[in-house]
Image 1 (tube, helix red, strand yellow):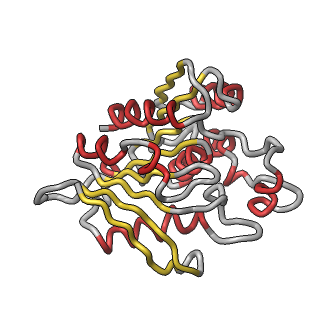
Image 2: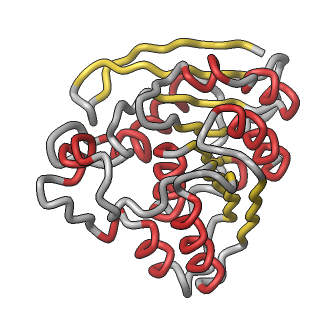
Image 3: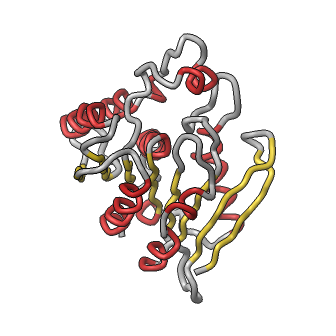
Length: 239
């Protein structure tokens, strides 16, 4: 396993940014399978490495793991800020494939994230249909129309906090009701998590819209003990 810490200038963001990349050892005859692993609110590109054993887990499956820094953007082209959705969904995969031998096949590309990162992973998978085989949301923030963290949300969505359908997971899921290219979805949530109820509503919407959904819950809170356990479940489900 090799770990790369990359700094490059992003055209979408208009400034330099950081990405951590885990690559499997050994000579490869075919490009790697890829997991884009997104961080939560207040974290950065290093947090998954610092708080879990993601490098060891990735080594079990021989996959590349790409961990970008996306600030407090909610993986959105912000009302007052940078174009983080454009960066994560388009520029980042293109640049990573320039640097490394990564597969561009749908069946080899995956997304996952925790909390805000779970929202970003789910949104990207639902919007970029046909590009990702599966996505895992761990304690994902599924309903960004709920008014909370307004000091964070106003730069993302504007003073009115009006959420466009392209940033609304429920609207995106409904829009794919009749689509034949739905990504497979994994959701893991703790029974004591403050996002539990909205995840139940999103689970119902996904089921009604015909998604291939794997849903798991167990005792736990919105914390790294839970996410370290559940990223292993998600990886086992994916790979």
